[in-house]
Image (cartoon, rainbow, N blue to C red; front, side, top):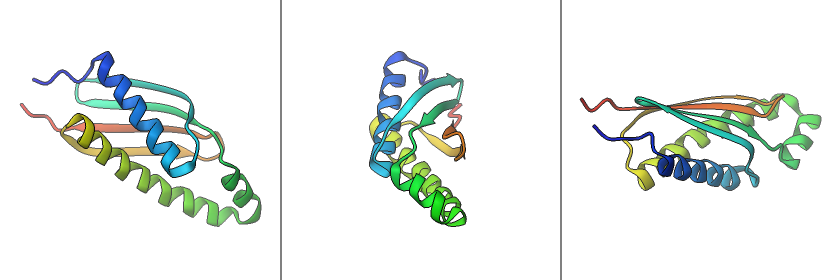
Length: 115
C-alpha cells in the first residue's frame, strides 16, 4: 500500500494548493492545514480576499456568488490535475466547500482504494 501521509507529501500538497490559489486569485492563503487519514486528504484553508472580489461584492452580489461557484469548480479541477501530475496520487474525487463571507474553504480529496 502506498504511504500518502508523509511530511514531504504534505509540504508538496501545501505548495500545490497555494500555487493554484495564486494562479486563480492572485493571492495565497493566510492559514492552511493539511491532514491525511487513510485515503482522504483534507485541506483547511483561510483565503485572502482579493480586491476584485471585494469590489464585485459591493456592485453585484449575485454575480459574485456565481463567479465564486465557477471559480471553486475551476479550483478543484486545477488542484486535481496538479496533484496527479506532481505526486501521481490516484484521485477518485475532489470535494470543496467555500464560504465567501469568512473566506474559509475545506477541500477533501478521496483517493482510490487500490486494495
